[in-house]
View 1 (cartoon, one colour):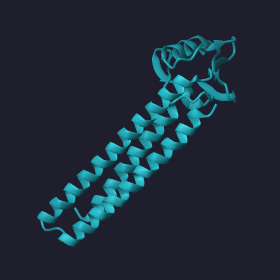
View 2 (tube, rainbow, N blue to C red):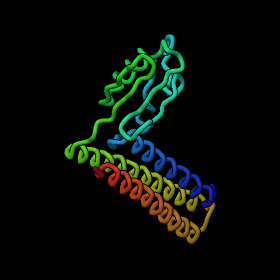
View 3 (tube, one colour):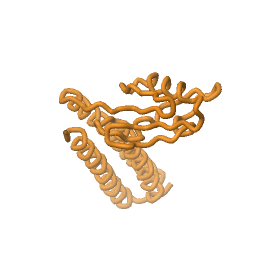
View 4 (cartoon, rainbow, N blue to C red):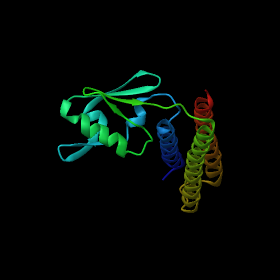
Length: 186
């Protein structure tokens, strides 16, 4: 394996780590309604568990409400039950045609807890990125020992791996800063 392949593989894995952090942060409730809050909810649809989006239209009519319009009226009960059972701290309201999910405003203590949670996700992502860098450097050293590359090439590739690591860690820091600002806004 040459340095270019090793670095390309490392870059792909780092991008995946950043994407995982981004997805985790999207799920954190900020007091504003977003359809992503219900992405993890699975509904019992005639005996099989399917994502909520496959049995209904999920929308946000305003900043404090998520609206779930089932395609079949018979699904209202199972949808309401699934949202309650998802342990999201949300209480759906069923009006017979639509399930409305009011998003309660966050208190200061809960906001601080959410900021800690975002930082935890961010740190996990950074650790994953550093592990990828370590693996890439080990592969580079192994390739040098097997005489697939020179010492100078290995050192250049290690510098590139560090630059890549710094770039992806900065991406995570930017995501965290944006999410923290979003959470702390009243």
